[in-house]
Length: 352
Image (cartoon, rainbow, N blue to C red; front, top):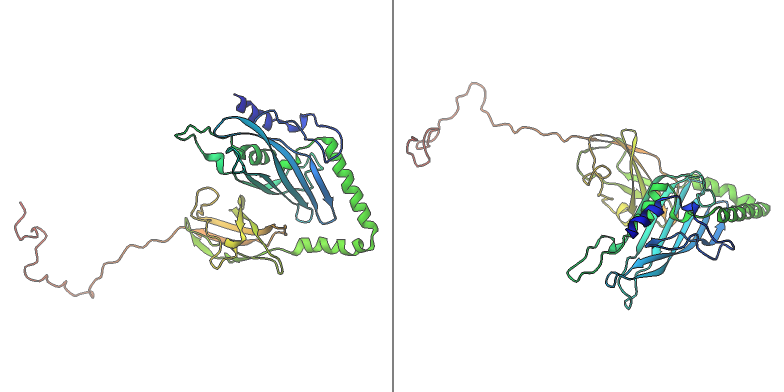
């Protein structure tokens, strides 16, 4: 019952909780009074005309898998917003227990999305094209023969909240904190505009953010694939960029289908990323229709979106095998002597 109440509270409006007053570098947004992770205040915020970056800390109340006892552990996070493509990113880490500590939930949680403005200083911003994923090894374990207790899953608390609210997990903060961030942002940009170097470089940064994007090598424009078969997605990084991760946006018949995070090792391999097309529906299964996709770099920094590449998926064509026939007018050759007729058994005996 305690855990059910916790989930209900998390999905409620988090901003109704009281937050401590004071500097940005102290305190938590709201206390941890049940299992899971709470939001944390930004410990550092940096604002430029090209991007906003943040560092966060928070707390998690977690249950040890053997002793079924609860303890509080810190989490750390990093977030960014790039106004040129409108991309918001975040990464949260709940560290794994030390070898001397009891087993408990831990993991890494990431999200990328498109936002019309930076969602951290702006409470009313809602984002779209959200892709959130988690690497939480103990989220899916079950009690074993030694009666280890099922750990409380972390992914619904972090990535689930991101998906349901259309905002980064690190954007849940009180209005006082948002006002301080907005003041810092305004002051930083005003100070930059006073310097001659910024007057020269800021327009260039804006243009670069719009035109730099990866190249889609596969599929090619107009290419056709058979349904329920792998469709290779091969990408090339922008010139001079060292890329570790991409985001692929796929549409089907003019409607958004899904966004897929793809590692650079797969996307830039000779055969490309081949996990899309023959996977689970609806996202990873290619059925007959018209598709298009585009890609952007999401790590270690974010680029703009590439141009759309349109391709088609069709049903495979099956043909009925044709039996060899003689030339028209020729008689079929007589069977060799001793060959059983249609009414004879292989032994030569007549069928009854």
